[in-house]
Structure formats: structure tokens, C-alpha cells
Length: 131
Image (cartoon, rainbow, N blue to C red; front, side, top):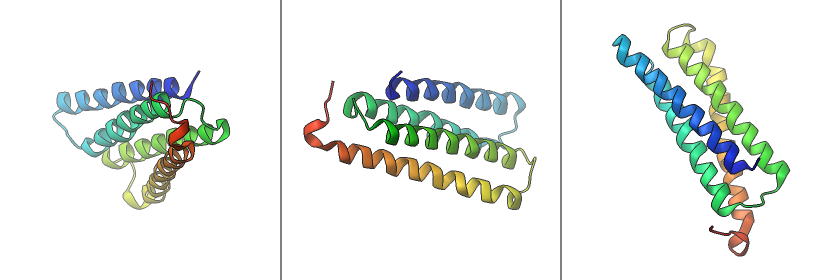
């Protein structure tokens, strides 16, 4: 399975989960998870969907090891971030307990974005193919 499809599948999973969190907030009339909801939809759905498009249109044959590392880092960091935010805004654990985890996850998402940028730049204009 190509990275474009992997990212698309994860993006669709995130959008469904993010919508479930939104529906829960609306039904319970408790919007305490708004920050977690927004991050699930933006970092999870939107960023993963954009990465799927980048792979489909501009990275048809990325370096397998680098693309795998970038994919795994983005997904792992995003999942840790979402879990931490849900625990924080659900008032399950206090901020001082979750801050290190959220900080590391945020840096992981950033590093994954930088790796994606590197792959796009490395592909070069001559090798990038719009389909």
C-alpha cells in the first residue's frame, strides 16, 4: 500500500473520531474537549490528508526508509498528542503530569512536518510529477 493511501486511511479515521468527540460535546452540552477536538481534526485529519495529497501528486516514489520514518513519527506523535489533550481537557490528569508528553508529541509532529518538507524539496522540480 502506498503512503498516499496509508495517509488517506488514517485521515478518514481521524475525521470520524474527531466528529465523534464533537457529537459527544454537543450531546453532553460540555464543550471542555474543544481543544482536543480541534487538534484531532486539524493535526489528524487535515494534515494527514494533505500528506496523502503530497504523496499522490508530488512524491510518487519517496525514499522508503525516510517516508516510513516520517509516517510513523507523524502518526505516533499525533496519537500521543490526542491522548494527552483528551486526558488534560477531560480533567483526568493534571497539566504538570501531561506537559512533558504533550511537549514531546508536539515536537514529534513538527519534526514529521520538517521531514515531509525535506522529502518534497529533495524530490526536486524535475522529479515531482503532478498526476
